[in-house]
Image (cartoon, rainbow, N blue to C red; front, side, top):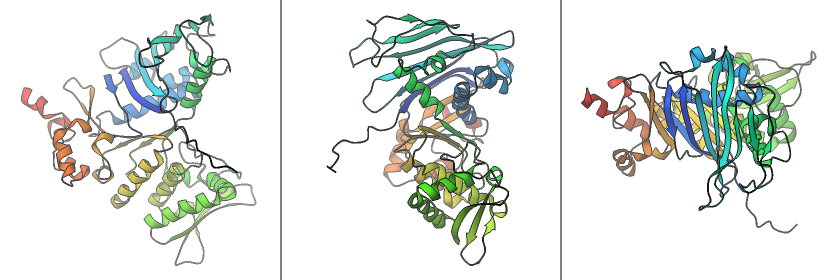
Length: 412
């Protein structure tokens, strides 16, 4: 075979997130998101709420808007306190590096205890000088779409009414081949892996049968290890090698079928002749194994969300896990929430956003890469986690002004 000269085009990337009226996120915008983006802040600062925005949007596409809405307590619990305005979520992303930026806009409200899509649109600007225009534009289930590989404002807009006011146009029209840009966005969002990995779930004994990707709770860990052992043995051995580097004495992990049709996940320590069942393994071992399987997926999801990876892990393992995340971010996009200085020590300022709640109780966000003082400390060899614990960020300290920046303290 001749040598391939082309390069992999690269994964899709979210560059911007804007949210309004979603719980404590009264009005927040995260710009210039990096392949690995880490949200830092005190408890209650809004990290988990930003995380849940991604989970909410993914569930809207997977199970429908109504179920995702009701799961979160409807408007009474979802809307920001003191507002009756619709919830707004906007993401701007590129399908591949160099492709046009596409902005997905979604506004949701509630009528008679049922959610409705107030407005939904897709827009882009073709070329640097091109005019931004919408090639999908819907209001309460009524709207138009421009089809084609490269939708253009000169093309004919087609009226395609939706079946219900809570139906998402992108989810409906994204199943039609004549709408490739909409198909791409639908597949992108439905492929997100917003992780709630649980060591307890990983202890289970699922039905035997290989599965390609880890579930959001990790309850099919044994199935994925079975799949990797059959289809990607070298990749699985690499995962085990990384696990051995982090957890002393781990020798082997196996997933073997039992007579009753379930899978038995076992972990063998080097000094002992017999392995132990996963349900008797430590929480930290199972969590680390789950993270390594997720981050070393041969066909990774386009977006991975990880909430507080420091739970159940020894602090000295977090630096290596952060480096695993950065390495994996070459093939996917990763969002992590944390309040661990040990995880933070492996990061660069441009990868970190610090969150806090202002005097009105609403979440605010600041990109740490804009902090010149922190940049100078980093150039001198300092680490971010140490700088944070020593109070050099000027914000994000739960014991000082509830994490608010210094200027809030001066005003008061």
